[in-house]
Amino acid sequence: MRRILAAALMLVASPAWAEPIVLPFAPPIDQALTYRIEQHRPVAGKVSAFTAIRDLRFDRAGDGYGLSVTLRSIDTDAPAAGAEPYRAALEPLVGITMRFRLDGRGQVVALDDMDAVWGRVQAGLKAMLTGPEGDRQRAAKNVQALFDGLSPEGRLALLAGEIRPLFLFAAGEVEDGAGRGLRTVAGSPLGRPVPVEGSVVVAGQQADALDLKEILSGQGVQVAIRYHLSRTTGLVENQERSLIVGGQALVESRSLTAVK
Image (tube, rainbow, N blue to C red; front, side):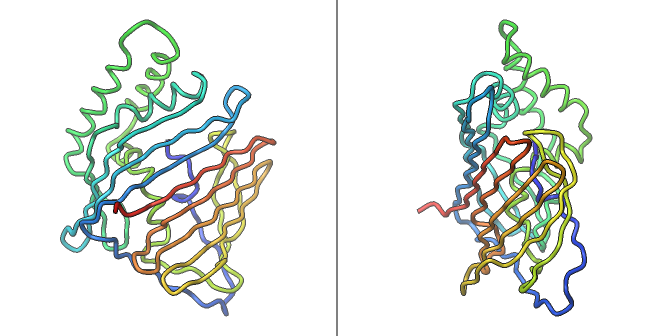
């Protein structure tokens, strides 16, 4: 489920003269936040929309932080070939509050009450398996097979996958000037993941924000990502991603906003 490039970055040498921009990790405490992910990609010959909205709240936890995450809603206008796998993967999580523990550098290190959370997820998936055989049940069986093969570490990675892009640059540095080279893999869900490489450069600076542009390419794959970061919190507040594989395009947006 975690499709995206962020977790797999491998930095390569950058020019010695490039000036680093240091970013903090200081998330807002006890502030209600909304995290919206919207994706548009082709399914069965038409471009379909997939949307997930989560409620987030940070708190202090020793030397690090807690992050409570609740998947509030999901929606899609895709035909069954795309809608049922999407729903099977996410519907069991709707309404479940998960409290992740993060270290002082924004790394997810644990999930409170993992066994209880996982039990509720499994119960939700089991409910989807009832009823007549069809696209819904087939999709749920595929997700069940994936879940059954996960280690505890794999479960944590799966459950935290969609929030990790928020912390991609937290407590780190980005290179001004010529930027920094990177390598990762891309392609899914439009095609087989392949190695891609390119660079991430500073596209704009404000007193309280930083804009970055990432361009990657590989065999038949092109990726362009724009990040808008808070220089106060170190969080990615907006992310726009374009992935092109074999002439097919996926466009994804992520936004983190405070609840008024």
